[in-house]
Length: 205
Image (cartoon, rainbow, N blue to C red; front, top):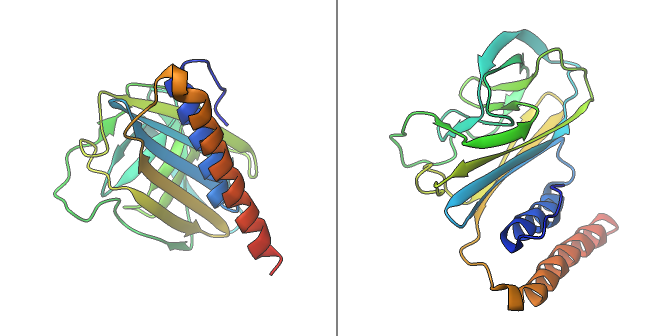
């Protein structure tokens, strides 16, 4: 999960990423895009089983999103990635409205560069990726919103070979003042706990 800092807005994003990502805990890769205070925070983490997949080559890319093409997370530099393809299923757009703007690049980021190109049914992994290795990255679209990125809130899921990939897009429209922030954090953590208990109960039914 993201390291928790003391700035209230950063704490909130960290907790949401930690608490709500558990709703897709079975996925091999979990991505989230969260709109908050004039920015969109983007994070991904997971591992890829390349058995049964085909490494078709490499390309140079940078993190960003295009609603009818792809989403890529990580540091801002142009980076060489491996392209894996295989048995694929899932949506081919993050918004059905169109037409879509050119690729939106992130303004800052860190970690590995990786992501999904659903237009070509491929996964971008770090260059010389080792099967099963856990990777993570995070990025920020500063002074952007889900609307400006042409994204709609919702949950999206793909499969690639034996791998499950999920993306959750959501908006947090208000952040409480520091004096009321602790109760708000407790309520967020309580929501995450209740969702985890419901999933465990369903697992044993």
